[in-house]
Length: 462
Image (cartoon, rainbow, N blue to C red; front, side, top):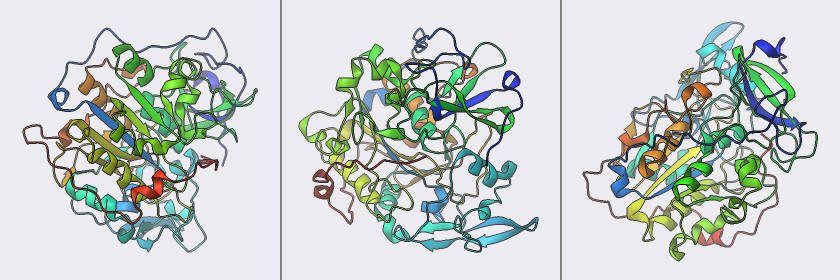
């Protein structure tokens, strides 16, 4: 489905990669203009919090394409009933959720238009528009027996029951907002701003995209204009890379390969990183090095961890490796000297087209997007806590800023979300002694992933 904006001049825009002109960087105006690197608002660092005394390592593990209820339907206290609602001939009907397994489930449509259709203005009742007729494919949950590592983590630590992506749509903007809290590309002139949406250019969605690649814009009232935005090599918004570098806080981004890693590697689309010193030292491939770095005294203060496609939980892969991959990463950190100073956040980048009953709050013209699972693991995490707090991806960045005394990336008026977001701080209790780590059992051992051959398979199409 393609929706065309009738006028660019009266629209706010979100931006996603479908291909861009202006090769070699892009501009802070969609129509062109001088390129300007935007840096964080460095004059007002956040005061350090109690977390700063105990946490000095934050690890964000990013998995793929699951709604909260697709994994945690029926979980006590999580607002996740075993049924949903659809619409047939204009009449709202109740539809029970059915059990699926990783081996048989479909890969459902999950671009921005699809999320807007399913959302249905907050009614959450058009998920039955997708999948084979009569199958109600979106109304599914994965057999909990296949999710034992996730359920063990939830029961031992924290299940965030209200985590929402920054905006509607799939993976690329999800990953972008997990490093920047925004994807705004225009703040001036009025009526701005413009932001990223998520449509693949068929290749890399990055500074290494083919010349002539254009991005897609999403406008106020959810109007979408394809292939009108700048080349995906961005200077228009600040990221955590510049914030962390300025403060001397070490960071790493683990990815299947450094170059041409696709939409799961957002720093390849950030000009200052792609063509700066961080490119040679902070982008770590293959991603399996996260399994050995902790034991080798090589864990950075902040880490983002992305998987290979078979390990990603991505629907349609016929692979049940994802929960064991996450357990292996957690175990590698938990068994290392870093455990007592670590906070690990596991989050899924988008909802994958699957049903969820909770209408995402609409905080701006981008979203929030469909609810996704989130686990928070730490020796200071509350045991068995189901957080009732409304989180968004900016909540994770805000927590980083609180731990390390960093300034906000920028004001909410410019599209940044780390200032407005609720921190994940309520999921911790620093009055308690750090809990001893208990290894997470999994079907596949850590050795399976340590020796996993590098994958050249494209990580995702959208």
